[in-house]
Length: 228
Image 1 (cartoon, one colour):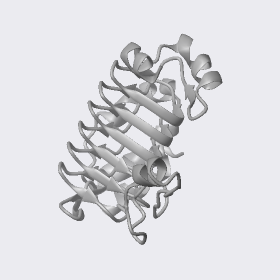
Image 2 (tube, rainbow, N blue to C red):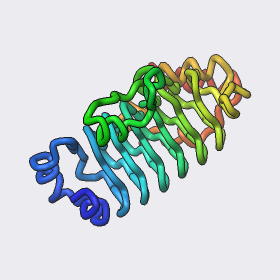
Image 3 (cartoon, rainbow, N blue to C red):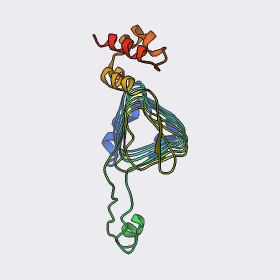
Image 4 (tube, rainbow, N blue to C red):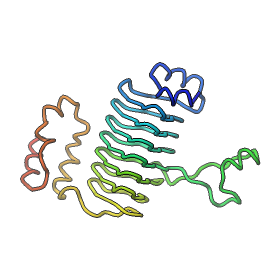
């Protein structure tokens, strides 16, 4: 059944059927969400309005994808993972919240299940939480317990094993901050604005705000005007 749903791209008419007959899966998918063929959804999956999953994405666990967030091809979200609004997740990115238990004689979950008729529960350091307006480059791996702040950028090929501050640009293995997107005063005002919570009518009315470069103290003053 899962293979058929994957090939079909989980059309909306199948969601109730999945909730009723697949004990391991519960889907809460907005009508405007787009799921490409070849994706696999397993667990408690919550896709908010206008999210987009490109081909080959695997969501397995307790996964939430925020409004208008895009996942490019072959992304894996495994375990407890929450992505905020308006994020851009490049191809072949992995969010790996669960890990193998390493203190027993074997580390393979399948061995315990099929050979021993036993159980080897996965471990983890906590959920993965990604803020809003985050850009994650190609082939990034985000590990258990990590929080990535609003507006951050993660460079391609990075392994993120610790928290990333809002509006930081990080890269490397392990990922480290290499610069900030904006000066401190601009970062502070953007976090106060929380523009990602505006309705889309307000966003369109403030189009000029989104089309300006934010580099100087003068730009900060213009941002402050929007708070009044």
